[in-house]
Length: 354
Ligand SMILES: *Cc1c(COP(=O)(O)O)cnc(C)c1O
Image (cartoon, rainbow, N blue to C red; front, side):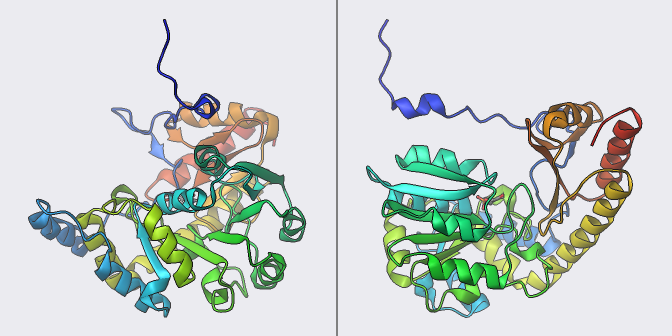
């Protein structure tokens, strides 16, 4: 029997499958999604409860209060800020804004698994560039390239491009091509001399920086992120983004989270200290662990990745496995890091090659 005709590209996109164990009745230790391990601060819970009073009304589509607070925090004018239902919603808006026949999007690879999906959905050709420095990425820009996307620090490897490399790269991108820096993990960066794209915006109208409340600010469940860019670009992207997509509860919570930023970012310091401890212990145990500037570590186990991922699942620990490439493990809290470490060292003792 004939079936409804949907876009053929959908057949090429794998159905989203949550990591084993995360949503089970007895959930695994959650080290697969790079969330904040810390309970929400009481002030944040109170703000969310208070926001419940108004939920019979639509949210402010312009997110005025949150936009103002973000502009103040980053020392930019409000017309440079756009809030979205998670930064991935804003990435989707960016892909759609450039998506027309013949357009091409390029990004370093391996990176965030959503990028090729967003490209397919927007109808743009995606060009993953294997393991480049940013210099070789710039060389791959063609007249058809409308968007260059750099995840910095990179998910899942944790690699970070510092100030000079970043600036030299930005200088090579033609002004007709957008550059998006996905800084979902920037709050975890401790590399000396690190510069956010936010500091480089001034003279570059083609640069857009995305940030999120989902990681360092601990609001993954509420879905709120933002971007900062040139006012003309922000205005156009505002037309692509769905107007009422950021809930009133999320807007209030994000404003409160900014008020609590000092305390929340002190928790990030603790995660960074755990990152160092975990990496040192894994290295001492014989694993190869590249430097990470994010809240996760990357174990490039190549052909043994799936086996190691299964080993962790069997030990009740959810990690993210990239078959044939590596395993990403979030830096968690409570006893989760030690449980992971013990499982990893047991795998080694059991004959796991690294
Ligand atoms: C987690 C993550 C985000 C954040 O997405 P939200 O929609 O804001 O939750 C964005 N980019 C990358 C690379 C991420 O890993």
